[in-house]
Amino acid sequence: MPTMSSENLPTAAGALFHMNTASTPLTTSKDPIIIAVTPFGLDRADPSVNGWLISDYFAYNVLLHGLGSRQKWFTTTSERELLQKWGPYYHGNPLMPRKVVLSEELVDSGRLTPVTVVPPEDIKKQFLHEIQVACDESRAKDTTVPVILILVCHGIKEGPGFDLGGNPLSEQDIKDAIGLKVPITILTTACFSGFCAADPTLNVTVIAAARSDRESLSWNFSNSIRKRGCSGIFTTSVINTLTSVSFPENPITISKRPQSLQPSQPTEEQAISYMSFVRSIEDCCAQVTRFADNNLFQFGVEDYLWGQPWFEAIGIPTANFSERWNTLEEYSGVDVANPSRWTNQDPSLNLNPSYAAIAPVCSTANLEPPQIARAFLSICPGDWEQGVNSEFRGNLVGLGDGNLPAMNKEKIDATIDIVKYRLEMMHFADRVIAKMGFARPSSVECSLWHEGWWLQHQTVAGVGIYHDLNRRFFPSGYFFDPTTSQGPLFFRPMRYISAAIVGDADNSKVKASNLADKALEMTNDHLDDLVVKVSREKEVIQKSATWLRTLGKRARSEETPGDDIAVESCDKYR
Image 1 (cartoon, rainbow, N blue to C red):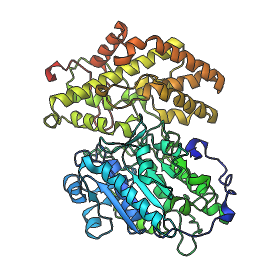
Image 2 (image 1 turned 90 degrees about the vertical axis):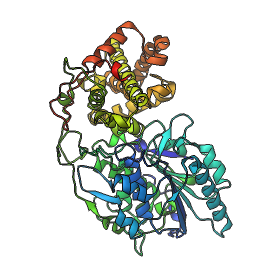
Image 3 (image 1 turned 180 degrees about the vertical axis):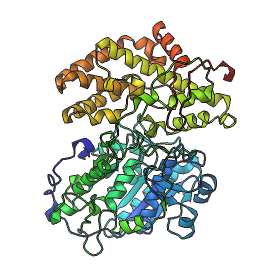
Image 4 (image 1 turned 45 degrees about the horizontal axis):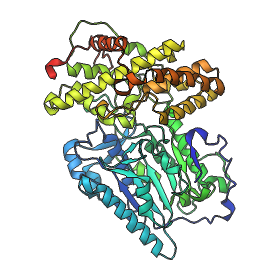
């Protein structure tokens, strides 16, 4: 099945519109079956951890409520339990007004489809069983009806697959559940989920938040005491696209809003094509975040029908999505502590990185684990919005807030070990850059580099080479995947070196490839040292120990200005 990622969608919106449109009837599907799943239990649904995915889950729920022949929404905890422990869930950029997507009012008024709560250990089995039942039901009809699968969860690099709360869901699992061909759409927020679009034997329509080698990204976490995450950028882009279309009687009427499907004056075929729809998702992404180049969505379409009406390709029924979304309560508690801080993704603001705010400082202060956590959260800009880092970030936030009673000794040790591992990885990347004579990307060390800001200043050719390098390094084990005790996947060192190669390659793919060979060779020279702890060379160990003592970073993030911090031994906590 042919696929398309956001980086290679045609810039001319009408480029592929001619395909198949003439033979496609202007009809809409009135009775799809919608099956959704999210695996997060009550503790993991904490707004400062995976709450942004819970917001996505209920955003789709409220938007699709009552549509199709039937719906099933699987989860491991009820709406009431979530509200009782965490309060309402919001959707959108915390620096702007957000929509309330889960509240007592929405539940009481029946504007949400009630969830089906299942035990965590059964969620994969129940989800697959429901897919099988739905597909059998579809085939039994005179005309097969679409089945829409919505997976709001984390992804698994190795496999690849979806993580349903520790229950890996593979592509083969999905194939087996589908059985004989029926129209299937997979809409997913998961990291690495583009793999669904890459297998021609699966042959389904795919709208995925991330290419098979990339993470999905959330909005920045708020500065509030809750430090909550409020949805993914992918879901915001999808919803903005859906709500830009109005079709009461005439399904090809295009709204005059800036986010409207492209082009601005489309022909009838162009206005309704699936290619137009996916192009619009990309356009909407660029309109809501300055870091659109970091969000590499992946799309696929069944039987290569890119030119068919978008609602036919997806199987979605027509509805006034704009009215549904606009009538949701708006939470106006905008994160106003520093509305112009450089991490604000609003592309309308002319902001520049303030690396000085997170520059290393020397200090004689001894740091305990809470201070280590705050120090580490003040570096690695951009990483904390990656889906793979949700739970690690949540642990750091809890530790940094001094929430030690809720974290046992084992969890504290594990969190600090991940910090040490990542510091060593970044040290090694800095050494590779220095030994190869590369200029440092953005003129900063690995720990301070911001991928999104760097991408904004690259040529189109440079961005393409950068992503090509990361695709090459991703499956090769470059910088080696962490062991279980070393936490989630950590791509910063790999991408920092890719960025340095781009800077030295003068937009030449050949030169970049040769430099990548040398970088890989240098890494392989240290293979024995790096497999477990990145490098056990005396020099690296000493530098890491020094950094852990003097790390810091003045956690003069905007929330806690003026703290001189350094990292000291944590023996008293071990």
